[in-house]
Picture 1: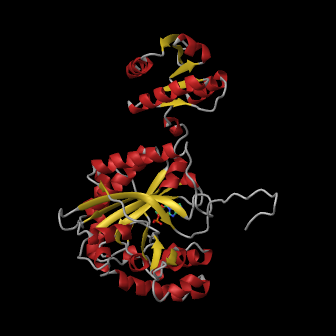
Picture 2 (picture 1 turned 45 degrees about the vertical axis):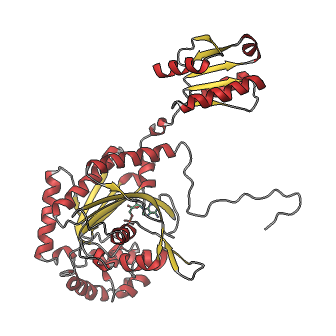
Picture 3 (picture 1 turned 120 degrees about the vertical axis):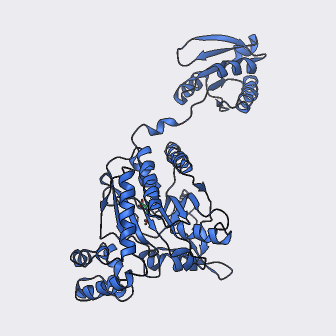
Length: 429
Ligand code: AMP
């Protein structure tokens, strides 16, 4: 709506739960991403980039119809062409789609992939919980070996250590397989139906279809109901139990500490066998920093061949908020600041700065016509290595004053050939 005459126009703000990441903060993001890139590539993972928008069907089929995400959190809309599209609430489904669409399973028997990017879930925003948030995702396809589970979990823990995350705990569980889970589902369903009146509306509705979801419900009554419920881990088949044992042995060999959490089910339906979650005490209510698990049925359920897989997602906002102070100090400062006064000096600064930048150095100046004194101040504030001063006197004499900002020493250099002289100084730094 238009403001009344004379009223100032109101600014347009970001959408609730969507956040800007500002300079000063972006350096921390780069640090986290570069650390991930380095470690993942040491383990043989390659980057994949997938779109943020997918056909709604992809998420319905993979994440599961009776999960919170699909039931109430997806940003789904009808495209102008009448097609139902959804902003991705997680990355695994998209990576699986790309994997199948481009037959990535055709070449190497094992595909190791990672991706970074925004996810979208319409949850209630609060500290550490946003509607657009970012994840670092890892997926390993084509191996069912329990040592691979241990290796992927180990890589996650190594990554968290390298981004200086302290006081983290790793919890693991096994969710069984299509061979053993249905029988447990029945047992659990029977147990919970005796407590039906204590359950929230969602869980009551899911009793018949997906009683395991009750383990993931935050409502007090539901938590109390599952506290004495039978546990899946006591019902898994010999194959799943053996797999889980070997995962634990692998983790011990790699000296990766963990504890068992038989009540952890994760929020997505596609998991089989190993699941894991990393939490930290430093975060308050939203204490999960990463989670993942094995998904041996997912590729098949999406219409592909039988390809087992395992992966995880780490929440970048939460990692960033836990980075120790001082990590923002990696922001780059100018190598050279040119303080120029007057039209002639401005022209020289313009040419000089751009020449120096072409050689890979950070040169800064300003065209505001501020006094030399205030430009010097700005140079200091930006943390420049050198400041070159060009005022009217300097133009007249064909010389400029060069100050080494670190030790305060200064001297004059000729304006003729100044660029070459400055470059050799900067290269020697
Ligand atoms: P999930 O796919 O739900 O297991 O999420 C994996 C990780 O993403 C979590 O451990 C969090 O660190 C992060 N995460 C999930 N949802 C949000 C959200 N709404 N806001 C910020 N981070 C989130």
